[in-house]
Every structure is written in structure tokens, then in C-alpha cells.
Length: 478
Ligand code: NAP
Image (cartoon, rainbow, N blue to C red; front, side, top):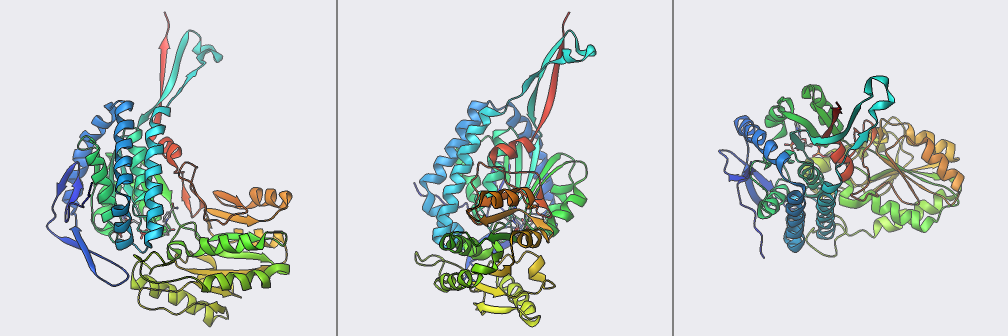
């Protein structure tokens, strides 16, 4: 069956709605106009929240068996239209068609997990009589939906990161309003189409297209919205927290992930995994490998192999099966990355390979000798640039890895169990990957960061915890 985006319409509480103003959706590799979507107004967002208040009551009353069936049907619909979904991702975002197909597969898995987890939202009995005041009382606690979830999502995984909010929200009986990134709204609208096809009752889901700076505040500040589930940059996240008031916030933010390579590591594996982790989605990946700390004895060999593999990358047309890496999301983003690399070179860094921008394309780039006072030594690059450092030992590697304000994932390559355990204990991150790069995630695991990388956890089961409240029920016996 062929799918199509209801062109130029957004999904407002179950209805496909036109706008009065428009946003052009552009293919970043050649500037071609792909489509136009409504630029929602504040009034649109207010109307959406009003309808979602009714939607929240409908969602909470929906039996688990229906939630499971509808989410499962949406997953099936996406799965049977994988190529259309993947082509859309590969047009509006900077992912290649091979990367886009993987994302569609992940989104289907995220939804299937959500359907499964719906049946596992349980409570437990409470032994009230452990306290003198509780004698003669029996009861339990259960988890209840919060009501309305406001979801704000970024451009780099325009389908699966939306599925990570919509699946758990519906599984746990909430209504949800999604505000996708302005540059990649089509994949989120296609997700809405899957739920519409699956028979989700109206008013439970909205995908409202518009600029975060214009309509974001209405969603974030509205008292009826009980949680803001945000994925994006730390600066935006902090701004949202300041405005949200007394409601839950889930923050999935950025990082500049470290990987440690010790002298006993399988170098071939460490190189292949770190190269792939550095340049997936043109480095626009919250888990992307940014800083590699290599024990000095194996530094030269690691560096040589790393550069060789990097130079084999095919950069170009996203729709070609042969392409390994596409452009950045906009030419301005490529210019931002170019500027950060130039700053490092001006301060004495060595350019090992890459470094020449062509419009929105920036090649896979490797730097060494990057001084600590460069912006890219401390901040998230969010582009295809990786920094190689030689370190004396594990102590120095851990100290350097922790010397930033972020902490999402880290990787360590070693065959020494004691060293791996030290890394687990001491690295300040939300996940440590042993003999893998920082760029590893499955959709069922708890996912999130520490420090400026975030608050709370996603991963379907864990998102459901965040999107529900416990309620205690206590019977006083006669
Ligand atoms: P961004 O600029 O922070 O934007 C994210 C979302 O926030 C967009 O939908 C944006 O809307 C919206 N927004 C912007 N200003 C807002 C405001 N004042 N109020 C409400 N919403 C507002 O991030 P991005 O450039 O799209 O994505 C890149 C960042 O996301 C990186 O830092 C990356 O590491 C992070 N990320 C984290 C994870 C994770 O799971 N930890 C996953 C992926 C990405 P507009 O598009 O309309 O501006």
C-alpha cells in the first residue's frame, strides 16, 4: 500500500489542518524544496492543548488491549511502508538512505516495545501493618498517566526520537502533543499518519509544525501540560526548564562522548567502531564519538588506521546506496563546524585529514594535538570531527574523559577486566560500553545522561515510568 504525507497539513488532535503561513522543507544537500508545512500559531497551539485535555481523558480510559492493538498496528503500517518512510528521512534530514532505513527499523521496534510495555504498567501491594498506624489496612499502589505530554524533538533522528515519546505516552494512557524540529517535520507527520491509520481515537495525538521560538512557550508554560519531554541541545533545554514551572521535565541533551583505547585493546575493532561512531549521520548524533584517548604505546598505529578508514568514506548523494555520509543539516551548520575546526587549527591543533567544506557538506575530519582551550575540546561539535589524544595510562584517560560538562555515553576498549571495572566506576556518564564505542544503543535500554547531558531516562519502559505517577490505594477494614 502506498503512503503519502497529507501535504501542507499538520495533525491537530486527530484532524489534518492547514495553516495560514508556511514553512518550506528543504533538502540540505541541494537546497531543493521538498514540501511545505503549516507554521502553526500560538492560537493553534492553544487550541491543540484544549483538545488534548479531552484527549487525555479518552486516552486514560482506553483499555490496555486497545492501546496495544493500535500501537502494534501503527508499527506494522510503518514496517510495510519502510522504503517510503526511509526516503522521506533521507530527503528532509542529512541521513543517507542506508542510515534512514536503519532508523525506520528502530522506530518500528520502539513502537513494538511500547505496545508490549503497556501490559507491564503495574503496581504492588503495600504491607501497611508494618507501622502501628497501618494495622487493619490493606492496599496497593498503581501507576496513572500524567495527562498531557508536550514532546519537543530534534532533527537528527526525525522519526525514531518522536516514536520514543509517542509510543510510551500512548502505551501509558496519556495524550501527547509533538512539536518536531522545523527543518524535519515530515517524518513526524508520517508517524501521525501511521497512528491515524491504526485507528487511534481523535484528540490523543497531535503533531504541530511550527517554530520552537514562536510556539514553544505556549506548550512549555501551559499548566495543563504535565510533562515536557525534550530532546535537543542543552541551551534550549535549560531555557525550557526555566519556563516550565511545576511540571515534570525529561531532558535528553547533547554530549561530546569519549572513547578510551588501552594498549591491550583489539585495535582493529577499536578503530572500526570509533570511525563508525564518529561519522554516523555526519556526526550529528548525541552519542557520536568526539574525543578518543589512546594509550601512548598504540597511539601511532591507532591514528594511522583511523585516518586510513576515514579517508575511505564516500561523502555525497544521500539517496545513493554507495554513500557513507551525507551533508550537515544546513550550510550554516557546516560553516559553524568549519569555524570550530579553524579555531582549533589557529590555536595549534594538527589537521590529520578532512577539513574542507563544500556548501552543506563537511568531510570526515580528524584532528590531533587539540589544545584544551579550544571550544571543540570542551563543547559538543555535532558534526563529523573527531579529536585524537595520546595519554599515558587509564588514570589520565579517565581524568580527561570526565573533564567536560557532559556525560551521556563513553566507550572503552580493553581486555583487562579490572580496567573495564575502573572505567565503569569512575566515568561520569549514563552508559559505559566495554569494547564498543559510545555510539551504541538499543531502544529497550535506559537511555540518558548526567551533568549537562540530561535529566531522566528514555528507553520505552523507562519513559513510561517518567510519564506516569504513582497513586496509593488504601482500604480501612472494618
Ligand atoms: P535544538 O536546536 O535544541 O532544537 C530541538 C527542538 O527544540 C526543536 O524542535 C526546536 O524547534 C525546539 N526549540 C527551539 N527553541 C525552543 C524554545 N524556545 N521553546 C521550545 N522549543 C524550542 O536541537 P537540534 O539542533 O534540533 O538537535 C541537536 C541537539 O540535540 C544536539 O545537542 C544533540 O546532541 C541533541 N540530541 C540529544 C539526544 C539525546 O537523546 N540525548 C538525541 C538527539 C539529539 P525549532 O526546530 O523550531 O527551532
